[in-house]
Amino acid sequence: MNFTGSNILSVEQFDLDSIQQIFATADRMQPYARRQKRTKVLDGAILGNLFFEASTRTRVSFGTAFNLLGGEVRETTGMESSALAKGESLYDTARVLSSYSDVIAMRHPKSGSVAEFAQGSRVPVINGGDGANEHPTQALLDLYTIKKELAYHGHLIDGMHICMMGDLKYGRTVHSLSRLLALYKNIRFTLISPQELAMPDSVLAVLDQAGHRVTITDQVSGSSDADIVYQTRIQQERFTTPQEADQYRGKFRLNSEIYTKHYKPNTVIMHPLPRDSRAEANELDNDLNQHPNLAIFRQADNGVLIRMALFALTLGVAEQVEKYDCEVNWYSDKRNSY
Ligand code: CP
Image (cartoon, rainbow, N blue to C red; front, side, top):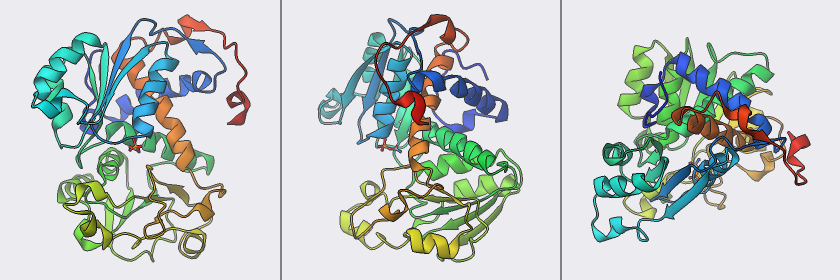
C-alpha cells in the first residue's frame, strides 16, 4: 500500500504487508514516546483534530502523536460547538478545514460520516471512529498489542483463540479488530454477548469466508484455553434510551474470581477503554488492575505509537523521522518505566 496522501478510513484498506509496514514504523516511534529523544520531522505541519463525539484516548493520543513528531494541533470538540450544529455539510466543513490543516483526524457519531467528510478534504483524513461502524486506528493498536503480548508468551496470532465479550453489536472496535484478524490463519473466535447484541452478520461473513472457527454464545464458560479475552462496554450512546442499555449492563463482567475460574493463567486481558466502572456495570473490575496479564494500559500506550506511524506514513516522512532528531532537555521518568 502507498500510504503517502492516503486516507485511513477502514481496516479493509490493509493487507498483511501494509500492517507490517505500520507496525515496523510504530516500533521506531518507541524512543520518542518514551521521551528518550524527540524529532522535528513535522515541524510546521498542522493536525486538524475534529472530534464530534466524546473521546479521551483517541483524541488526546492523536494530538500527542502529532506533537511528538514536531507538529502542531488545532482541535474542535463536540457537535454543538461546531458549525455542523448550524446545518453546515460535512463536505463544506472538510473543504474549509482541510485548507487549515495538513492532515485531519476525525470522530463522528454517524456511520460512514468520516468517509463522506474525506470526499471534501484536500488532505489525508484518518477515521477516529464513525458511529457503530469502524475504528481502524483502535483495531491497529489492538492488533499491535495482541502481537506483542502473545510474543511475550511465545505465541503467534495465527492459531490463537480470542474471546470477545459484551456489546458486540454496537462496539465498533470489535468489528474492526475482527476484520483485521480475518487476515491471519486459523483463529478461533468465541463471541460472548446477549443475543440482541451479537456480532453483526457482515463481520461474521468475513470470518466465515476466511475459514476461521467461530462460536457464538451467551455463556462465559468454555473459554478456558483462550489466549486473549477482549471485554467491551455496553455502548449506551448507540441505544435509543439509556434505559434500553440498562438491561444489558453488568451481564458480562470480568473480575479476579471470574478470570481465575474461567481462563488459563496466561490469558491476556484487553479492553479498548473507556471501561464503565459504575457498580451496575463494572465489566472489568479494578481488582485486576495489578494483574500482569492486564494489557489495557499497554494497549492505550500503543495508540500513540500507531498514530505516530500513521501520521509519518500518510505525510510521507516515515523514512526521515530520525534525520530530524534532537535532544530531550527535561526530566522524564518515562525513559526507564516501560
Ligand atoms: N478507545 C477509545 O476509542 O477511547 P476514547 O473513546 O476515549 O477515544
